[in-house]
Length: 276
Image 1: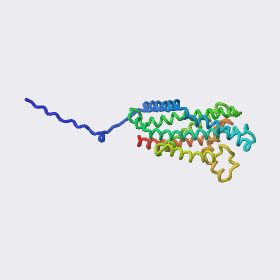
Image 2: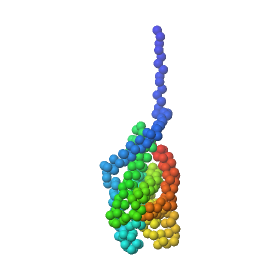
Image 3: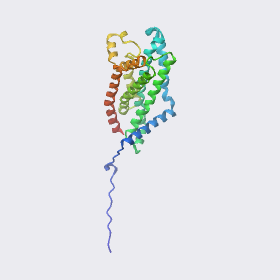
Image 4: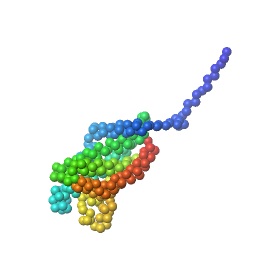
């Protein structure tokens, strides 16, 4: 009689398993759009998330136009060509802070832990969030120009250059959102992300040429306003909307956006991958 001896099979413990998750470029793009759609669904279910991009442009335009219009330009109508681009840049740039705060909130709530269990590209939740926020920038851009139009602002550059100016601001805000996304990944709380971001943004936006002429500032402050990247972006928008000129400041803003993405996108992705 032949005896068959069964060889026990060793089960590899989870700590010794080598698991890999590789996704194609097409799948990564598809997953990114899916996560972006998730962000849009969140906005639809909680529309109060859009308060900053809907109410802020209206309040700031009315407030600054009637407070500073007479003192700076003599009347409100003369001040609008300088004011609307400044309001636009400040509103859209400050809106980019939401990317970092919402990213930190999702990580704190364990949402990203659930994403890790899904067969999707690991980068998709991050890239999808960044893509979805471009809708917020587009809403803020549109409302700012509409509000200016209702108050009597008529861009001499024409609708085509106004659209180009809006796209330039949206692209710049998307680039800056990588900075705040990095803060969102490495920070401990969402409130700290918002606090740090506003501490950086408010001096940059107000110590620029967004609301007052640079030649009216003290010499040391005028120097800072001239080298301030926000001033370059505001000037670029003014030249496009008011004069139809795509000048040096527009190219400078594009170069600055490219540099920001080149520096902070790898840092953000590396920090995110360590946590994801």
